[in-house]
Length: 223
Image 1 (cartoon, helix red, strand yellow):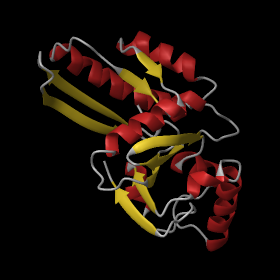
Image 2: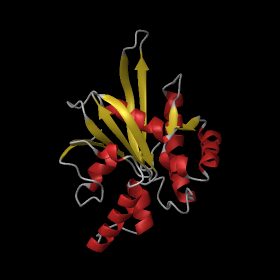
Image 3: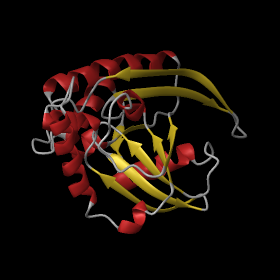
C-alpha cells in the first residue's frame, strides 16, 4: 500500500519455485492526500478510501482461498503519527495483517524491481512516490548506498498547494525546498552519469518541469 495507490497481486507458487499470475489490480486511494510534512496525519477521508479498497481485496482473498498474505505499507503510513492506529483499523476491518517497511527496505525492494530490467551497471536510482523518494547509488549492478527522503509528489503538492497550473515562481520555490533537503546527503550519491526513475508518480508528472536534480542522461523506467 503506497501513498498514491494500492497494488494487489495474487500469485500461485509451485513446489519448485515456478509461479503463475492469478489476479492483479491497482487502485488509486491517495492515502497521503491532506497530509503534509508538518501535520503528519492520515485524514479520515483517506483512511476510509483505503479501508474500502482493502475490504474488497479481503473478499477476493477469501474467494480465491489464498493461503499466505503479505501486505506492507510505505511512506504515508510510516511517516504518519497515526499510522500505527490506522493499521490496527485495517486488521480489525479487513483481517489483513499489514506491516510498515522502513525507507531502507523500500529502497532495497525498488532496486530488486529494476536491476534485471536495465542494461546498465552503474546508475543512480530514483524511486519516486507520493510521500517519499528513495535514492540508491548502484555500482556494478550492486546497491552501494541508499537514502529515503520523506517527501513525495502528494505531500509536496499539499504543502505548496501546487495542484493544477503551477506558476514559475511556485516551481522555483519547490525546487529550492527540495535542493535544501538534498543538501544534507552525501555528495558522492549524485556522482553518476545515468539516472533511472522507477515510479508511476514520475510518469504522471513528466508532462511538466520537475524540481529534482537532472543528470546528463536520464532513463525512465515505469513499472
